[in-house]
Amino acid sequence: MHIRLFATLKERAGRADIEIDLTEDITVAELRHRVGQAHPQLAELAARSVVSVNREFAFDHETVRASDEVALFPPVSGG
Amino acid sequence: MHIRLFATLKERAGRADIEIDLTEDITVAELRHRVGQAHPQLAELAARSVVSVNREFAFDHETVRASDEVALFPPVSGG
Amino acid sequence: MNSTLPTLLDITRAPIDLNALQTSITTPLDGAVVLFTGTVRGRTGDEITEQLEYEAYQEMAVAKLQQIADEMRAQFAGIHGIALVQRIGVMALGEPTVAVAVSAGHRGDGAFEAARFGIDRLKQIVPVWKRETRPDGSSWIEGDYMPTAADRR
Amino acid sequence: MNSTLPTLLDITRAPIDLNALQTSITTPLDGAVVLFTGTVRGRTGDEITEQLEYEAYQEMAVAKLQQIADEMRAQFAGIHGIALVQRIGVMALGEPTVAVAVSAGHRGDGAFEAARFGIDRLKQIVPVWKRETRPDGSSWIEGDYMPTAADRR
Image (cartoon, rainbow over all chains, first blue to last red; front, top):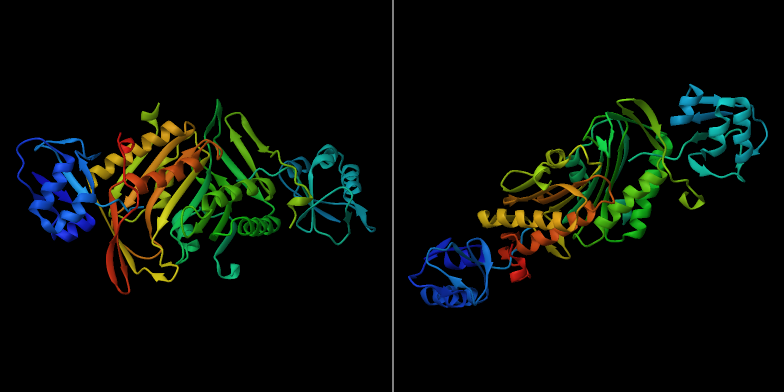
């Protein structure tokens, strides 16, 4: 699965997107955990970042599928 | 005394200013009356228009001097 | 302190440039600008307006704009720049006829409230009148606010 | 009815033109436009900001701007046109970074309130971030609002 990163997360990863292996459906909480396992430098940020699934906010108990468009980012600071 | 007219008053008078004879100090109420006497077509409007003296709102009991800058106009409608 | 804050007051025949207004009242302390513009409304219910023509008692109008800017700063201590611009002459549909702009550090520092206050006061005490042209003719519009002694400086 | 009302939503690298925004959202029914702009604030207390750089999750940001426009129309029935424009890229002091514009028949028809609501919501739910450059370096700014399920469409 392809995961897009923005702002602090992109900076910490040194890149705008990462890959994790995903074939089965998982929860958003499990997604945070797997990002931290695959990219330890993101573990702390991934645990508390905002998660979007298909361009909409997603929460820990909800399901992520391998085909979803997923992004991780800090609380927004636009305007 | 020179009196400036705006909007409806200017239209009714057919000109942007009128003259009335004034040597002594009078009240604003008396000014309205004298404008109506000298220019009968303005009598009705002069009785209820806004009066300014030296670029500030003036009221019936207040004094007008021959040297003052005086104007008569309807309630404002700018913006 | 107020003397160093930008205050732009104008009664003008020139079109109102909102970009220039925003730039002219924004200080290095400002992160927010609220701009109100009045425009020529083409339809009010079933009534059609073709154009508006504005005239002003120029000297008194500028003095009253200054009074309003002073009232705004007295009531809204958090605001910085102020622009109060009334255009006069003939204006077509959709064109800005008036602009009130206020800058402040943050959006919660009173700029919204000050801009609303500014346009309300302008429509009460600034000697400007509009003549409306409709399909059946034209006439001067009279306002409905009679000033009192409290509206003097 | 809403489908005929102008709604301009944009995440753009181009400078924001306030005159063009005003024109694009003003309908023949409108006599009032309220425009909020955020600007790059150069000083916040003792802190100096040299420039800001904005980035966006473009596709989601546009979807969230549409959600905000829908929320504005649902809450403020008297408003007509809406513009929500966030600029991204590098911006210098005083430049508009964001604009929220709302048109309505009269100034009391909710345009002030809708514009304030629009900028508040934009700062909560539109995925855009700013990187601040100060004399001592630069860093990403994180907001303080964590979205909830109520912030979804």
